[in-house]
Length: 89
Image (cartoon, rainbow, N blue to C red):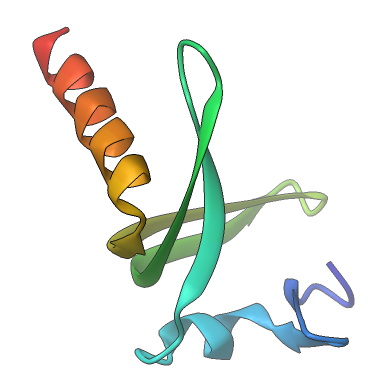
């Protein structure tokens, strides 16, 4: 946070988060830690929706829904197994 603006590091310079997220062409790469064994998979996707807010002036929250678009075959199998396990609970 800087001057009540949430910033995201993109390359060497930070960018304002809101415009970065709403551009539909922005592809993000991120790591997902899958329980219970904390295996990490890497995926690429686009933000489908997001919510940014604050509570009490010093606590900020960010929630987002990511549309997964790319991952390796092995990571894809782990992801599908994880989702199936959740559905069975």
